[in-house]
Length: 484
Image (cartoon, rainbow, N blue to C red; front, side, top):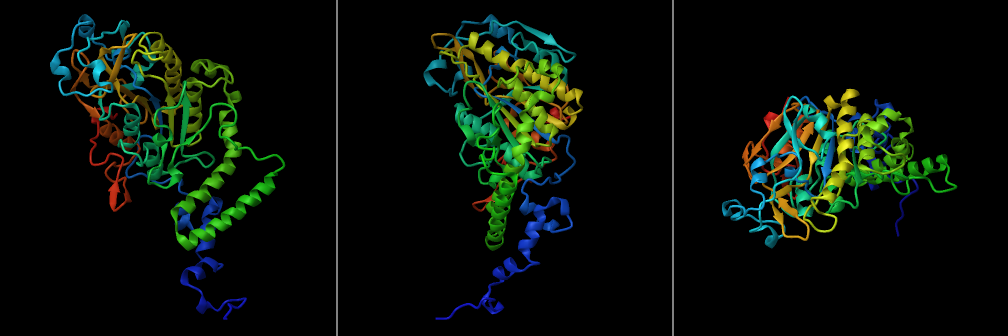
């Protein structure tokens, strides 16, 4: 039987083995690229070693970061922003058949043939823009001249989980990358000690569909969203086990990194780069994440502005954390707040339950815009507000009056990051049922958000299963009226 010598003859080594073992080979280059402070080594390998490295956009960007305030459940535009006196006048009368003919609703028998439902809330015009805002949002009414309202949004899917998936990924199918994943894949992140895509949650439960809403799909898993908790340890098990010193932990991570680098050189598997980066990020987050959620450095005026109560998780606290995250270079921050579903059942009616959820978000979201503006961050930060769809103009047949899911016309607003301040885009018919002017589809919204980040939605692609995929699929047009 033949044996390899202690120092094997080069004739017995494959080309890949040679480069992986060579002191000046690809293994050393990949390792050097991880050491960013020594940028003279291996610059060409930096992208593979650090998937989150900041990259230039396709063209000059207006925005550097995104904060997406996702109102999970579908807030009623007719109770908040889309004032319809005619609908109030016709309250209780049957809706004309021409409006609902051929339409589908989440609960097929509950909205067909039901009567029109006009709001009982008082509306007033606010700001120089004259935007209508209901009494449910007194704080938000104070920022109307800093934001653009789109009252003619439309989507494709009318059930919560697939509609959330569609709003976040551009598709109702599982396995597609989320918007935050596409953004960080395209331009990376400017934060070295925090993930590039962070998710914060508040309300009685998480959004329907769960983590698929911030998943990376077929993109490398480096780009998936990382949920942070608003109290306690930001991430479970982030603290070192008792008895493990910092030196010992660093040695362990270095050893794992070296093993992963060897395997990376041998296989060229991009997921190994993800694994290396994840270990390094987790190590750095042991100090950066607790510092992030420690609000002791915020002054009392700021805490009052947001309405933050000490050590109490809330949407307002998450808004303040969102500002702190973009200050630290995090590229995409997404806040989910539940529950905006308003069918009329227990916990989901348009009376007390709707008023409660409005109070939970109103002060915090207005404070976020004011705080970003005061600190000079709003010009570089795009803030987006909205749900997966809106509510119908008809009441639903429940014990307490509610409304059904509506995909043809609902309201979203955007601020900062190259958005025209004080604009009002789109118009609906007199019953608030259909968009009659400047219809903005989800794909158009996605294309515009990417454009503000300096990304051409048609060029931001990833080849998977022999096809080039993109966030907007084969659709999407810029909403030029949104652009400053």
